[in-house]
Image (cartoon, rainbow over all chains, first blue to last red; front, side):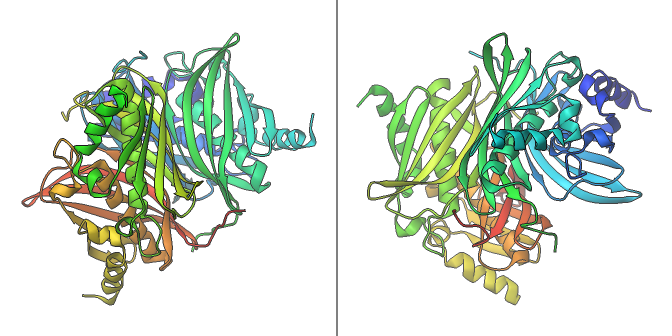
Amino acid sequence: MSEFLAIGRAALQSQPFSTLIGASLAHFAPGEAVIEVPISEQVKQQNGFVHGGVVSYCADNVITFAGGSVLGTGVVTSEFKINYLRPAIGDKLVARASVLHAGKTQAVCRCEVYAVTGGEEKLCAAAQGTIARIGTDTPK
Amino acid sequence: MSEFLAIGRAALQSQPFSTLIGASLAHFAPGEAVIEVPISEQVKQQNGFVHGGVVSYCADNVITFAGGSVLGTGVVTSEFKINYLRPAIGDKLVARASVLHAGKTQAVCRCEVYAVTGGEEKLCAAAQGTIARIGTDTPK
Amino acid sequence: MSEFLAIGRAALQSQPFSTLIGASLAHFAPGEAVIEVPISEQVKQQNGFVHGGVVSYCADNVITFAGGSVLGTGVVTSEFKINYLRPAIGDKLVARASVLHAGKTQAVCRCEVYAVTGGEEKLCAAAQGTIARIGTDTPK
Amino acid sequence: MSEFLAIGRAALQSQPFSTLIGASLAHFAPGEAVIEVPISEQVKQQNGFVHGGVVSYCADNVITFAGGSVLGTGVVTSEFKINYLRPAIGDKLVARASVLHAGKTQAVCRCEVYAVTGGEEKLCAAAQGTIARIGTDTPK
């Protein structure tokens, strides 16, 4: 395991909510991140699909990691937009993000979230948003 | 408690993920919904703030309820956009949504998410998105 | 006319594209801006409605002005999201924006775009986005 | 020229606003569209860059065409989100869109907008949004 990935995994494991739902960092490299979440009963909504809020968590978090991979530690998602494309059903969610453009204090990233059943992936959601270094703006 | 609110609460309680994090429906009326989530350790990220993914869950879910209040049951959020405005710290999150425009099969809603400490509310996030009846579109 | 409004109008008139389509600043005060665009043939699409691109121009520009009203001159819209709610038909577009939250270098704003026929206004679009001071980030 | 492209070009030319700013359809095939806009003085803002509203027009329109390429004629953009990445300076804007997912009545598309100077392209903006068939929803 690369040192880069080890640092990323330590960061993810320090998030109580991410450990609550069993998220793991499958890949982490400059400009890229992949987060996986097992599909258990507890992440579902009333129809048996993964709750949209969990899908949006994946999107939010994987773009934060992708942005952080180029901006450094101490970043947050400042905004994002997500389109849900299909109900998320299967064994696990896989969210893959990449950096579209990076400046010194902000990066714009995209991600796609897939639901995986056996070896088959189906695209469930797509997102785009901005990652910013903490402390680059403060309330007036 | 109104019958409307009772129906909404039953819907929220049927979502395993919503019960996992202790979400409750504080208000539900035609065109309006309010969801609350207690801020416990398990919903936080590494800096002690509520995880952005939980804030986005609140936004996603409260606009689904607001949209469902005018479109009827069997709705999902098809897309939304969220801006994070401040770190969410305090006792609970309160997410308030209202319907901007409703058609027969879709509604566009907005919401604001507040972090409440004692009696004081601070605006932490704002979102806007589309709610659609399930089954109004299907993959080709 | 207030000095504030005079400064805003000079800024709008210095934008060749805004003058091309006849945009005017109807109101400008700290945290608020209103831009109007007359509905002429040239701003329409093939069905006789105002082109969505012109509606999105109104949204983009009015939130830039609202953001600039609290951040100072030298600002740009860094991102926004728009939902189209109804076809825009009538005499003029009126776009009203306000600031939801402002820091030192960024502000998050919302706006609504109305189509006005005679004295009657119909809500046509709603947007939300981020305004940033120019030069607060630069490509690496 | 393919019949597909000819139909697309006729559609674009029937939009008075698109002809006002000289937009042309450079490519049109199932799931894909490319729109170009020459950078003349009239599409600029006060700093000499292309006005953000014109960039957002490109994004809005090119995803409408991409969506229409799979949904058929009679479509509109129902919502989109755009991130501005760099000031748009150069000879022309080139906006390229593709379909991420299509159902019977809606398609979700992405696009990138480039500013071209000589032969060099720079990514200026990225967008994601929903295209819908007209008449699939109507106000209550």
